[in-house]
Amino acid sequence: MLRLRGREIYFAWLLHRISGVAILLFLFLHIVDTSLVGFGPGAYDTFVSVYRFPAFRVLEVALVAGVVYHGVNGVRVLVVDFVENTNAIQRQLWWLVWLVFAVLFLPAAFVMLRPVVAVTLP
Amino acid sequence: MSVTTSVARAYEHRHARASSSNFELWSWYFFRVSGVLILFLVFGHILVVHILNSVDDITYAFVAERWQSLGWRFYDWLLLALALTHGQNGLRVMIEDYIHPRGWRIAAHTANWTILGAFLLLGTLTIVTFATMPGVER
Image (cartoon, rainbow over the protein chains, first blue to last red):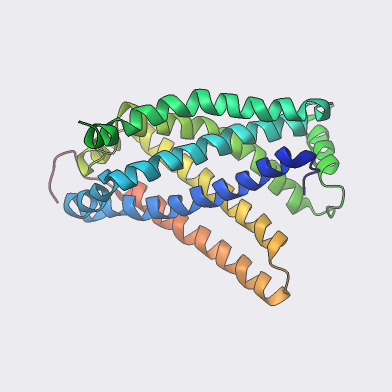
């Protein structure tokens, strides 16, 4: 597999695999739930109403976190693969992944969790 | 330097012990190309479905209206097909990494390809056969 340098890069690789599998498992569920549109509004609307439970909204945020991490870290892998002499800046690239992750994910999480916070706090 | 040689060089650089199999080279290349395409498609999907709208808005009527547009149907199908094949490829690499007994490995690969085919078929049928007008009861 990849030539790994340092604990961070091993962690990056491990998290990439875990997020990839988690996203794929959700994709299977998502294909099944969307297929219910073929059975009319009743079947589809009943099933997707489950996604509105607060617990599922938190899982939705976790899913978006997984997708954003997998995408941003994937770009890092592309940079390391195709740009020359990136070995010296591996660690900086890793922190850049988390910076970009935070910029993309935190506002998205705020928007998605507003209804949950509104229910919990008066 | 042509794209193909620079891709092959990058691949060999990362996979010093890899076999000379062409399939593995194309699999590795497909991972990168599909990943970049998915990146754009999935961020657009998150923006439209999770940020601009929310799970409160996702109903049969929402899907029916969205799929009145051939463009959205193609967008959704492309994301479906790329994400499924990208994920299947990831599982395939993980099977190679973690499942060593020959019989189990063959069974896992067979299951992986079968699951890809079944979900791709179900997803494609869902998108292609959906024909209801918005608000129209079946």
